[in-house]
Length: 223
Image (cartoon, rainbow, N blue to C red):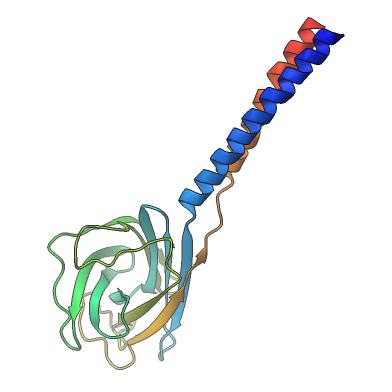
C-alpha cells in the first residue's frame, strides 16, 4: 500500500511540475505573439465601398485591401494628406498588381519604390458586388527609411484612401490617375487585440493529458 501511495505522490509531484512548466510556456507564447488587428470601412460619396484590414504580429503585418473591381485603388498610411507611404493597387477584377509608393503631395503621386517589400498572398473578385480584395504581407520593419514601421503596440493609425471616382464597370480605370473630388478621403483605424488561435492552448492541454495518463497506466500495471 505504501508503494502505491509513493507512486501516486511521485505522479502528483511530477505532474504539477510539468503542468506549471506548460502553463508558463503558454503564457510566454501569448505574450510574445499578442497580435493586434483593425478594420476600416469606407463609403465614398458615389456609394462605392472600400475597406482595409490590418493584422500585426511580432514580425509581420497582413493587409487585406478591398476596392472597386473596375478601378485602381490605394491606401496611404500614417497621414491625412496625399503624402508619404502608400500601397497602390492597379488592374481590373482579379488581375492585379500592387506597389509601395511614396506620395509627394497633392497632384504629385511620385513613383514606385526601388525596392518592394510586400508580397501578394492572394486575390479574389466579387463580380456581383464589383469588388476586388487583395491580401498582402509585409515585414513590420523593412529597413527602408521610406517605409513606416508597424508594431503590436499600435493603438490607432491615420489612413487615406483613393480610387478613380468617376470610373464605372462600363468605363474602367485600371491605372493610377487623378482620383477626382469624390474619389479620396481619410479615416482613422483603431487596433484591438486579435483573437488568439486555440492551437497553443490545445497542444498544452493534450500534453498535460499525455503526461498524466502514462503514469496512471504504470501504476495499474504494478498494482
